[in-house]
Length: 68
Image (cartoon, rainbow, N blue to C red; front, side, top):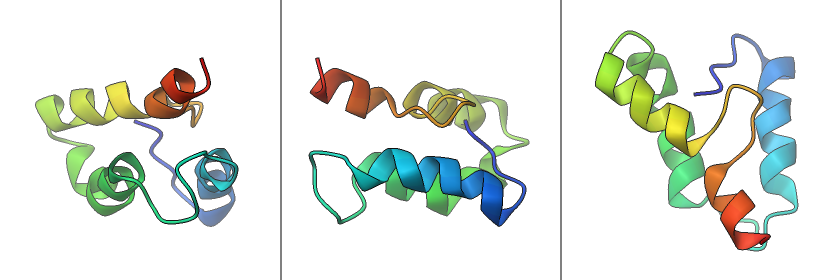
């Protein structure tokens, strides 16, 4: 779920989003990741959902599909 404990780790995800074809506005995946990341850490089903959206390496699942 790409939990970032500090700003420099969070920059990995920001970089992933920066060249997304969806534009400069946060997509629903980025919104869910940024809004619920901290709370989801200790909730197994929430963490699994966010894990499927964004990997721990900061790779967005939607972006991978868009770029195919």
